[in-house]
Length: 102
Image (cartoon, rainbow, N blue to C red; front, side, top):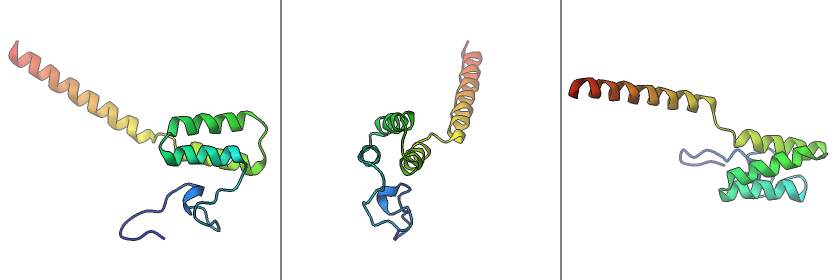
């Protein structure tokens, strides 16, 4: 249970999935290893593992957990919008500075 304004972790490894004990991940050893890599901070490696699992012929449970992992590690689209907005503002400010001091 989350306390003090904390949120519960979104993956199956952190009791975010209903009916699971903390630290238990259903599925094969490959799925558990991929979630462990994500929890350890290796998001790119975890995504590669999940894609490799989906490229094979996984069980329905493994497929669901691998897709959950890909969703949990995806970059939000809004982040790209904010990055573009920041680049535009920087470009405008740079253009204003160049016209002012040239």
